Image (cartoon, rainbow, N blue to C red; front, side):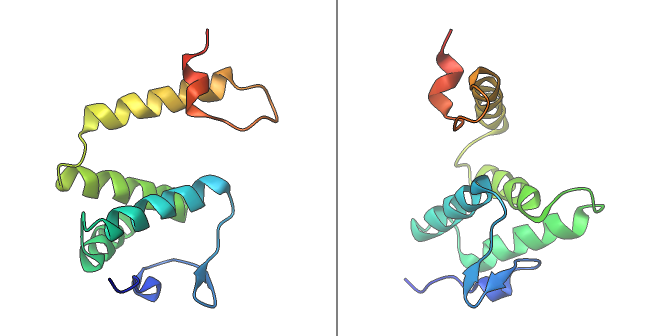
Length: 115
């Protein structure tokens, strides 16, 4: 499989051929997309189209990788890899993990289940 053409994506910041991330979650979101692409869940042109549509429909309120996540949710629902209920449930789990994690510690999903 050919590597994806990152230069075809609206808004991505590259250092040479490598993407630049401001936060660890951005790299994780990026890796999710690349992983799904490598598993042939969607083609790169499909991803580029969904991401472009998401970016162009934004009113300038979201960061690039917030739009990346929104596009990821869109394409996984479009491809029936997940549904809105599952996505909302996972968002709730991460919020609970955030609340349960002491300041300065890594936020881990398992923390959502601690009492």
